[in-house]
Image (cartoon, rainbow, N blue to C red):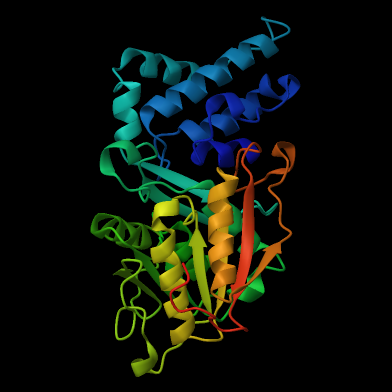
Length: 338
């Protein structure tokens, strides 16, 4: 189960958790690996290049696990599939990195039928596109894990949600499909990214416009009467999500202005920001701007689990991610504080 979840999330092959050698050499275990990971009938498989790298590592591990060559062997299905992969041409690593692939994220649950989200994403398209929205970032996975937790579910269940910088739509779709949100509006500043969110929503069967909507939202632009203003329809907003939206100090004034405007639209709204700490100074700018605007900020105690403790939404343990709860009980002290 763990290996399969890591595989469909396209965890680096060298970081996959393989079964112990005494299990790898068992025919029934090899049959299960083939059925769950390499059978052509799988609906949303990883790209061929990744499949080959994983299969190659598995077969090498199985060969090392064999103690008695007369009794132990590698299954014909796995051997034949490896031969097929070796015979076919693959795109170069750089070309493959630019292509969109199906990536399936399993929630951190010990249930064999854990909640899953499948998205089409291109993990290395940033360099050529100029936007970060074509892949699911670790901060989104970590915030998803928090919302899936017992303490986090209360923020989402039966709530109306807006996401800033939604990217692939992973978080918004997860809230709509598995966490009981009554309505979700996924926003991003890129037209192409928003179109991709619609594709991913359809892929996960959450494209009911009564419950799930998408919109283009440019930070810093007025929100009154815009796509996020649902007051004229009797609507409201309970929760605003933002994952990895604080990475660029140059975009901070526009982000803070948008947060301030959202508090004006919905004074009682709660905001959850998940921030990957790449640069302490950049995070300090964001927190300082929140303080100057009178926002109340609380750092939630929800650390990234150790690698051996992760059972879903896998995140490198070298990554420091912090989740902040932001409210506006004090009100803005300076309308121009950025």
